[in-house]
Length: 346
Ligand code: SAM
Ligand code: DTB
Ligand code: SF4
Image 1 (tube, rainbow, N blue to C red):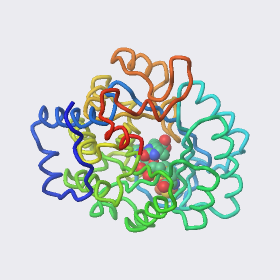
Image 2: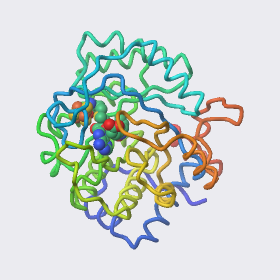
Image 3: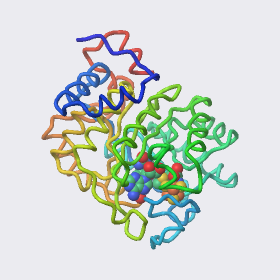
Image 4: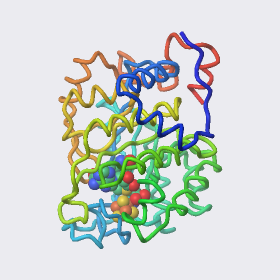
């Protein structure tokens, strides 16, 4: 086994561009080699999403079905009951998910919602699952309350490059996003931050988005790479489809720049062939969302994912053959060095 490449956060644009544009076979070989230094290449982590508050959002994200400013006809719901969240999480655990991600269509949470959010975190953790929330921007007090309730991960995406950002969202800035990410990290929670491709951006925007994540003081622990799901009645409903090879290049770049992060093949899998998903796993993706719904959009059914995993010889990260959950062990590549082991569980 080769020594693990050092973890760097001083990547330059020229380096990232050179990696992204390598001959495809060289790019995939490099990404897979880096992947094997930190992870078992045949294991994929599974997270389950639940929309705990749907629709009626005040933000103007051009891709989103939940924005009240878009023409989307999704009706707004209230924050759902804590008991329902825990019952859904129990089902997700039985289906093999190790992490439960709760998402709300908010610009940021209101203080009146915090007690219910804390109870959701505590209830899901009691099931032995990791918890993740995505609630929009957070202030210091909210960050501390979520952390103290036991929240493991906070998801907040930068969505695209700083340059393209204002074409997609005008109601909050790229810098606002980075502020929330820094607050979450400083409070000691794990950061989940990625973005969306296929929104009509240029190649340089995909590269710069990954560069922005890879040059944060610490790499995000999880990097979701979403392929735009074009939502009816949103400004991006008819955007031209991205070449899938560009998507795979984006995944490979994420893996090479951020070797120890979980790279999540996130939204958009319903429209991806088995071959494309397999190529994404080869390029270093090692996490997916399971279950037939994401927040509001369709996702492949669990049977379909299981058939694909079986065909590829992939097993679920963190779930023993007896159904027990063991995240820390499963993240470590059996052949990795002691040094890499410490790194992989960081
Ligand atoms: N309201 C919170 C926020 O925006 O931070 C949390 C929920 S929001 C739906 C979470 C993320 O889902 C977005 O940042 C975006 O990256 C992704 N997303 C939303 N709609 C999408 C779509 N149509 N296609 C792909 N990804 C999408
Ligand atoms: C992320 O990056 N992707 C997930 C999760 N984080 C919250 C959300 C995808 C949403 C896809 C569109 C929908 O379901 O409405
Ligand atoms: Fe609201 Fe989040 Fe959708 Fe933006 S992505 S409109 S903040 S729910």
